[in-house]
Length: 427
Image (cartoon, rainbow, N blue to C red; front, top):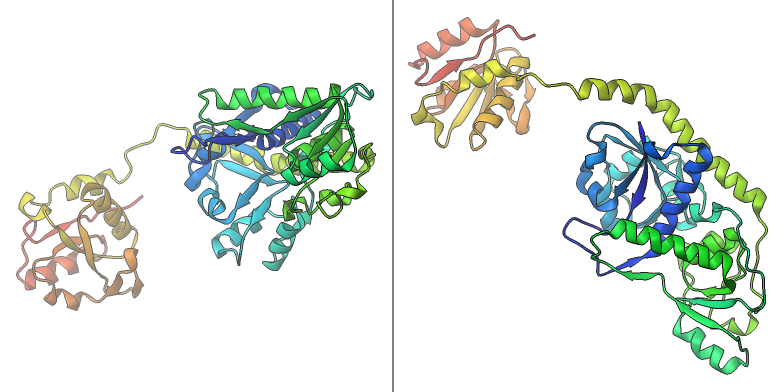
């Protein structure tokens, strides 16, 4: 079993993303820190691209083994529909999910989240959404808030970093009478389309973390994933924004966030939050969730992977070999009826799907069973065969083969021309 770190360099295979936000990589760095505290060796850590999870796809790294993947990400409803459920080889640990949805979740998503509950929620709106659907959930915030304290600048000569500050703040600053000797404008946005996107983002993010912790006298920012890491590292901070997003509905427990209405109340020394006990609590929760998941899945996934990685036999070979004998003149626009809805009938149906993908199942008959077969086809009594002129019949019953042959002979059907028997003892 391996441990994954989610990486975002594009949202899909066809999308290089014109711009990328280093906030996503900040979260990856925080997960890497959690793994470091857990003592997970680097050889067991795998980077998983978000775009490779779309549609339940199995990333190449997960094809031969199972991967535990902590999820701490902001998703919109449409992206979530594409992403979940994840590949069976990806075992999610929802540490800090932030989920935008204008309405109710589809039942498929509700069922999926319940399978991996409790769901750690990054913000309160996500917590409320989960509870609205009776999905066990808890409030966690963002994993970037548990990065270690490392602020070393602490001098009045350091730079004041303006990180993606809104225009409203810039306008206010020009008129408020406050001055700084050294202001440096920084952005978390980087151009997309880089061939070495992941490595590039990792370098850029680590360089920023180093600068915030060693050079900044003060950080003023509108970016959530500048606020949380700087708060965690002990960097003096002034959060400013035009709109306090619901994504921030957790960090306001620690920080006061200023808007144009309250810019006049800013404390220019910045906010330094001492929450080491709470940070340790967050780390303990993250570590426990991941370790508990590993404990629950490691043994069974290891053995399952051992079996899944074998060289596979040619399953259903008998049925495929038999239906290959259907006369060539009958193979084009083939419409067929299966006699027998048991295991042999199901094998026959799947063999037909593989060998004759353009064929069409038009009927299923069985002397003893009732109900619905594959493709929603109703199971009927063999008497309906009187009305199936031109349809090819496949006998898929061992115990009922004799009766089937007698019935078809009485209807003037000839073997090979009109029907084929796939009777055998199934294993």
